[in-house]
Image (tube, rainbow over all chains, first blue to last red; front, top):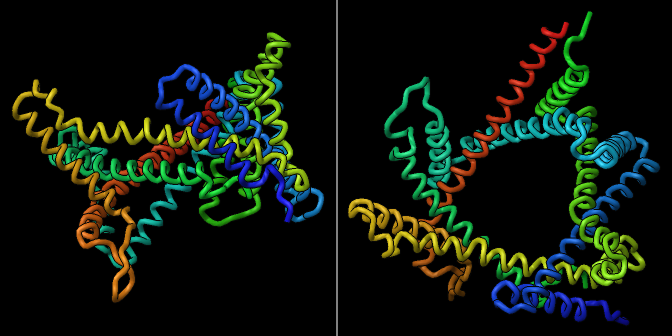
Length: 212
Length: 233
């Protein structure tokens, strides 16, 4: 099969060169590298914005075809277009600071988002009850106990403060601060190490998420 | 019947209350109206995403230099303009290959930013924070405080190490049975699960608290609207 020059080795080379220049710009204090890093990052930001627009364009295309070909789902796609045109016309033509745009945010977007968060809350509580229905392992017990104690310690019940539970200097607060910090720090370091390793693998072409 | 309140506020309040109740109704089951709201919401967000990327990135970085100085600006934006143009080919199935160059550039820059950010933004500060309790420069602290800080520092260091050990997947082949991790790493990883359970429990509790705050805010909005109606009529 004939391979275009834009296929793998060339793309990998471009990724490697741009990635290394930007990466070296982070750690080596050299004027030209710093300037190149700044330029490449700026171009990357522009490309990311264009990619986002392409993504939205693709979404529009999908909904447009559904509007024409699938009568059962057309009404949902129509609603999608209503929302899209509304935000573009109100935010784009009248401006972000316009009172109508602020009303759209306050009376449409915020209620939907806050209500969705409440739906998530109910889902989380349901997930907790499912956890209780299953056999409790020692780690599940620690997880549940942490949640219950953390919730109890956040608000004094009936205005009564228990020395062990409430307050910044309470024993529970200190325990959570130390043990929680250790756990979160371990998780953060694990995520960061994983990101660095995955990044290096893609940078050197061992993995190719951008097509063959 | 007279309205003493601004019409927009009343109408907006009614829309907000209606949307809140409809989204809450999703808890009883998926239905036509709530799906309409979700699709409309996705459309709104897509529109805002386009607006945001145009106003904050594309206009100031691509168009403004050209408007300020047509010749110098054209030179300045030539490369990103060509790369952006090539990226547009990704929409076409036939010419999508032409967009690979831009995508490769974007992946390279993105990865470098990810690696640089992970090292400078997470690894270095977190490792420094693990080390700092043992810093001798803190000798100015009172002896009792110093001991307390060092004990806490040891606990955090231990917790961090055992948590990290849990994610160590290097297993050795065995003559009998499947490959297993070394015994001491297995033990450290087992202890690490306690710290992970506590950390995840705290994160979960934080999410629950934020959810309760949202619930209280929604309930208050509903009550405010009822009061508004009572005052308005």
